[in-house]
Length: 307
Image: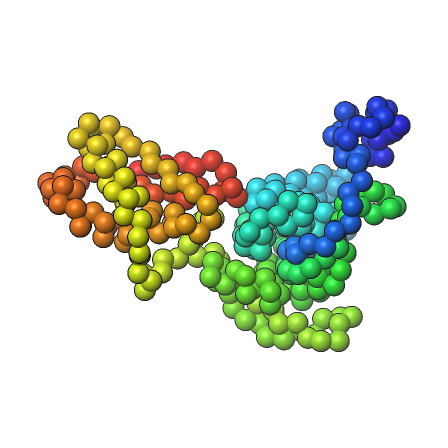
């Protein structure tokens, strides 16, 4: 038995190639809601005209390697590289609850990466990115055995990329709806994409509201319950001060149980103000006690606390 990717000999029944790691077990086709990112390098043709092909290949390889790192750092998967374009999937084969947000953040990071590459190497290239979310059929193609996604969602992402201005990111309506609380957008209206009868409502992604994992506070919503948890936080901080030791406090729990609200500054402040023992500590040591909050999110990697 041979690996279809590297042609190395593998033992019968192996799930992965021992030489290159290629997955040998064929995945069954399945329907998934994914976010498709389609990026295209602008200026590739001009770059090829006056440079040696080997130099062009090395530049494009370096660029795509950096872009692939941006994609994988946010939990995405590079689906394919075709010429001067790269396609990535967020939500297949591994799904997250915030795949659409991850895709848009990755796209904005990719624009920054290409901008730095242009400044450092003077290559004169830009990036156009289109993002769309919806249901697709994912699975391995019979010819080539490559895991990929098929459906109108992929085609629309490609059309959004074509309509985007160099250096910008355009997203479809479902992606916008799923991420508008976390990403700042500007509407660009209806786009009549080639090959589609119905127009597509597009939005230009401008910048994230915060870092991955951060959520804007909902001060208008009252905080109910969790008295025991707030008592534990207060006790931990009080003990850290009295023993003159630093404290690293982690709040874990299932999604939706109120971790972010407990860690929010307004909730902690309200809890502390209701406890006389903590008021006495803070009253005379406001410059001594320093509280640093950092979100822990799978897309952001290791967390570094800085004072």
